[in-house]
Length: 233
Image (cartoon, rainbow, N blue to C red):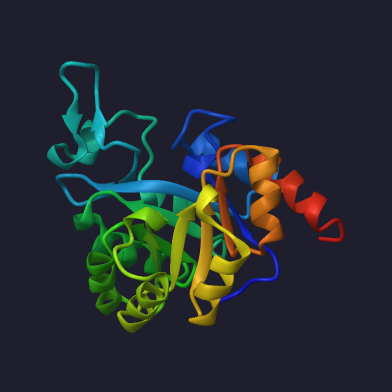
């Protein structure tokens, strides 16, 4: 995959602009020009995929894990995945960091009910676990989220391994990317995603490398960066 313009993913809904992982944040991100939304997904005790970063709610020291609670026991401002999918266009890309592997199958099934899974990008650092989700759906996009220093083979070998197990892309921190690395992964048909692009220099760098997607907290900066590098877009 290589898109003409990168997907601009609002990280945790664009947390620079509104409380992270809330419907208010997701709505604002779309208004500001985000072309994709990112969050983390967990599964409640009663099997509901919900959007939250660290998977624990409540006040310290009595915080409780989302997996031990029914959806009705969660804070009112914590959205379910269904809440988000109800709000947005069916073709808007959604990237979910699957913090709870048990959430993968329900997330895929739910997204299929809201226009299909081709716009769903599931991310995880364990590419073997990630690959196991390919059997759940042929259209869902699978992305290995990692960093160069965590890859224990040659980068070329790693690219071959990802493609062999049905992974669609690789997501690396902004600082890892170079034009050469983009060319290497593209040679194997892998989508190239960059995360933690927060400042103008970082965003411009990734846009100039023609990455397929960029994640950032500041949606306005992402949009401005795309306009600077590609003024005709």
